[in-house]
Image (cartoon, rainbow, N blue to C red; front, side):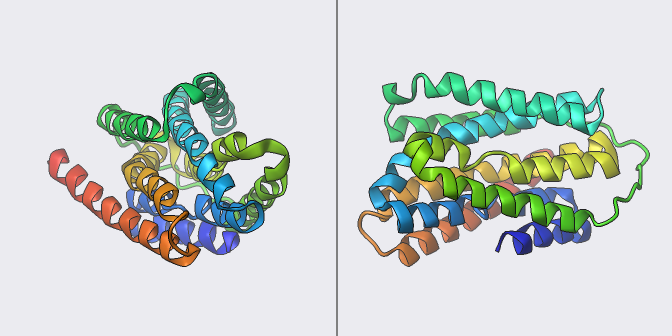
Length: 248
């Protein structure tokens, strides 16, 4: 599934633009399958207990996005990626220290609030001359990287436990792949557009996770995931409409 997802997101970005590509990428393509395997292999309780960690992970991805775009203005993709991952790790480590102090409702509210604030203050860069660089076999490289990551996280779940498995579920792998490849081929401007698209989708993503904590203990997996995915898509469309409206 993962090669198909990253390949599809890449083609969507090329066809409909980076903003749409970023929004599509923010859907739970990675978190959904990982949580599905958590549920099947470790049980519903493990998955529900991991969701607070996933919320922490989303806040870490927000930090990743800001660190990457501000770094991309001055630095090349590899240094920007390194600084962004440092921001993610620092944020999640600090938040993990206070994870037990707040319940799921508080973490969900915090994630929504920070996502809205982040979207409102995310830098809008001036469009410059397009680099128009190409990278041979870029889609295949993306497919390999994302598949290895998903397999690794699900394999390590028993060792890591629910909290750290949750934190690493939204680990910015698809974000990193899209950021680095776009930065290399289109520069900082193109990267800012795709990251802004991802931020637009974080509200729906967080809502998908919150619904799993409510629905999984009650309903079959297919219903819980189906309803959550539907809500995620509807919220993404709503956020896209609002972003376009306020941008005018």
